[in-house]
Amino acid sequence: MAGTVHVVGSLMIDRVLRVCELPRAGQTVAARGIRTLPGGKGANQAAAAALAGARVRFCGRTGAEGRFIVDELAARGVDVACVRSDDPVAGSAAVMVEDSGQNAIVIAPESNARLERADIEAFLASAAPGDLLLVQNECAQLEWTLEFAARARLRTWLNAAPADAALAKLGLETLAGLVVNEDEAHALSGHEDPRTALGALAGRLTRGSVVVTLGPGGAVAWVGGHMLEFRGHRVNALDTVGCGDAFVGTMVAALAEGAPLDLAIRRGNAAGALAAMREGALPSLPTRSAVDSLLGSLER
Image 1 (spheres, rainbow, N blue to C red):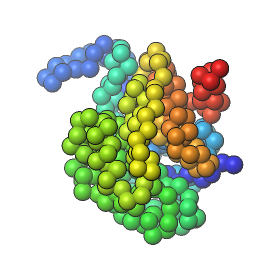
Image 2 (cartoon, rainbow, N blue to C red):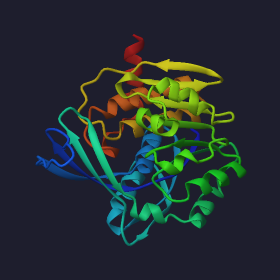
Image 3 (cartoon, helix red, strand yellow):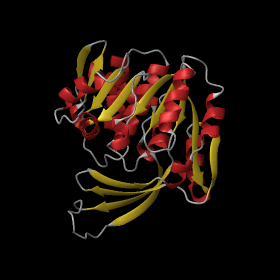
Image 4 (cartoon, helix red, strand yellow):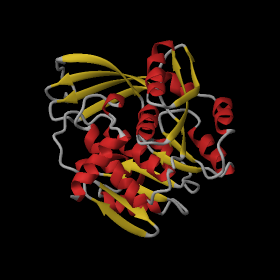
């Protein structure tokens, strides 16, 4: 049975530029085209979880020009009753994608930085103890939200992205889980090797699990005092924007259903690979049936 996932997260207007190669410092390159797409880690992950079968509620803030993102979430089955679109400036991101599919992103949080405690508290008032809360580091009030969720006895998963200096000091003891990519794991732990970083981060969680995603290399996880490794999928990557969000949202949806973490990670891996084969972030997110199909083909 589908579980409920509560997401306090960001909404970003993604302005995506296709380039031959990402520019080096001081270099100017010409883009072959530009597209405006719905995005934001919170929005992407909420949509991924809904497409994976979870009941999803979303709390966030944007401006009038970002209302189309809210509409896209609603079209994918996300409950957007607690989204405000009254901010004077919507959050946005400049996304450069090179021919290899790799990307570089600069975000301007704007409206996301003005998310208010009262809105989050009202949103979480209807969450039941044991429900799953998903948060990222693109919105205001992260530390307060984690503390409130702990008092409400929610199972909180943090996607610690983007990683910054404030996160290094953030208390992680109450988390049910932490998920980061290799760069974020390095930033938070000081260790370049993702497996060493994994062990260091696990030491900061009292009873939660840690997942480090490795892109096409799969993922490693610390569960119950043991390290688990998961192989990735070989695909023809067109655009890696949103792959991590596809992984996180799909994984969390499986956890909300009661799936064990190892199965949830396998589903997340499949979703991330499928997202790499399409352009954009939110538009690239796969359906539950697509994930089932990919996993089923590997079992045959």
